[in-house]
Image (cartoon, rainbow, N blue to C red; front, side, top):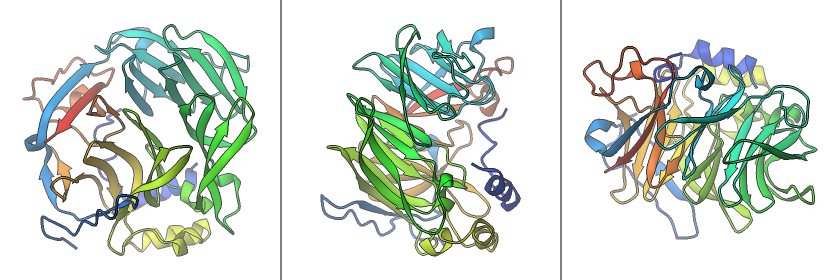
Length: 371
């Protein structure tokens, strides 16, 4: 599967299939309102473009080892940490793969079934470096599974009594869960983000009132680990939240200058909301985002294209990054101040030093810094 290009052009017809099946130019220095220290930063999104090759300060390309047991069908989530590289493939291989920092395969978790150490689908995962644990969320069997970070051995499970869609470990026994909005009526907003104590099996607090319609659009990322920060955002909801002191607070607001998805649209039933998108004029953030120090990357779409937005808080400039040789179309996390992305070998230009025509099975992990 060509992951590097499959999401580059998003047409209305493709959007409608996903909707049913799911789960004006400014100058080069747009008006950026950083706000007060305790207020979220507002980023004014434009369609100005910039070539990413000229902005790369550093680039690491990590080839994931090709072995029969390590072949990945599709990347649904990546976490890069001091323990190595973790890659989740939800539906093709139904596996969580672990590679070291150089891309050498270590183990995979792939036991499908209904036993204590088995899952129906590994729908999301998170890691706890301090305690040496990997967590996998099985939404079908409503359990949070614990595995040893070093060897992948199953340690135990924690039951959950709600329908979750994604999650992240926060600290100790505290986890953040995004509830699946489709289980609720669209008549009113429900709080979809909760902090949950798995030891006491209690919800500590809840955030993000939203209509259930907001879960009909595909979202590449919900929770993002940015070194020591946990960030959260979702499609059709243009606020990025940051976790701090047992709460999630708005950190960044993406302003599409009158083209954001409004509450009026989200409160409509599915068919009427779909009609609003068909008529065009709506821009939306699709959930893929990362922040490294003063730099923010996120994907957003209009009715024809997907863009990789780049905001530098130091220079207060916003651009949409494009490439000719290095296929960076998304950022899905941060490690050691490097943005994390991925691509296939054949996504590189044939003139690139990274291009290998016969190495087209496993994707490459890209770590990069921007000027």
